[in-house]
Image 1 (cartoon, rainbow, N blue to C red):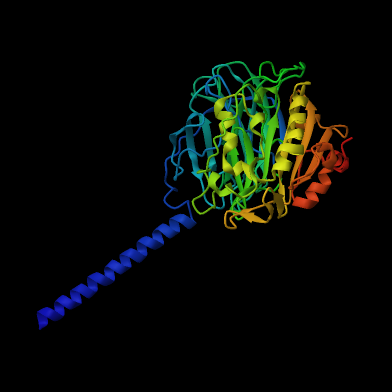
Image 2 (cartoon, rainbow, N blue to C red; image 1 turned 30 degrees about the vertical axis):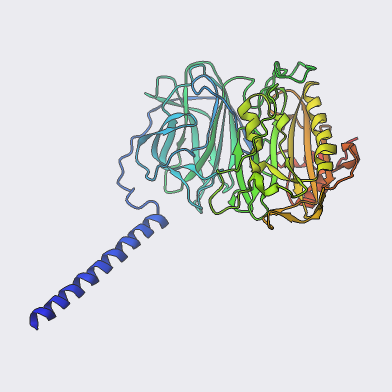
Length: 493
């Protein structure tokens, strides 16, 4: 009896200790999640050796969108690093292999992916104390422009940082350009005109020390005048194919801002590809808007792939439409960013066929004034222009070949009332934001999603202000307010 009582006591004691261990472990991991500095305080930190300072022109842009490119080389051609490809949970000093660019050195820095990290996509770099993130590879032919997005982490106070460069394979570093003060919780863009011809590597060094942290995202390197913000104009071309683009390269697909401040929320989900950027609405099964840059560099002679694909990049909890969701609906799978605007290569054309770039579109709209306006904008690029385009849908209820519908796919996909588009037209050139004036041409249209409407896109001209009121989006927010007010209120003639 005593033995049995002792056994029962021992079992209860061990059970209580096991429960205590489980609770303690859970609390420990909860603590780690809520305070990501846990167990990082004693991590060894290897500082950068800074030996000089280099002056260069520095420009600032509020809430500028990410800069996407589709470069194949990473040593002589530019790239945009978004820190999405790997994870790094601690602030330890180590090398990190990032597939979008190459190997980077992180010191007192990690890759953040929680709700307090300011980011485009799922991740961004986070730097604390006097930490840094620097390239561990060289740009062999130098660089023209560096663009970096930055913001305060969580509720942290302001911080300061510098762009750094190394010309001796990372043995020593130099400060480049002005000190940057990070004072906003919104990711803003700073641009450094480095115009460097030597072999060089770059990075970010936090100089303010202390416990305040900063997020860095979309670290972009432009290597020559035909990358990034284009070249120096000229050329007019008159064919439909690729070839010379008038000295103008591929720009960011979101140069003038994020119209809805899209982020990671299900109904305003930020999604970017090299060909376009969009805000996806999971409850409607369509994009809210799609933004892209158009010039001769984006177009070629590739045919339509007609390869409609489900977008598996969406979170698993989102509704992700398939081609079958449109069958026998009376509506076409209407491209927002057109196939013909991205036909320089087979892959670029195929990427316009993700279903996140589609909305139910009446045949009379899709093959009528919508296609007519697409052709017109492409014709502008053959006359020496580049066009920044944002397009999307509004409202509920359209008339297809099978009559009026408000939804398709058993209610999963909203049928829009109208399709709208705004287009800002500039002569081929560089530094597009600074070239916008009150005389810059902006075209806005809003077309009913119905059968039997006019085929002439000019019958649906409106103003940007009207579309902003319709959608609650804010277009061209990076343009100075006085200029923005004029171009958005003017109806194109």
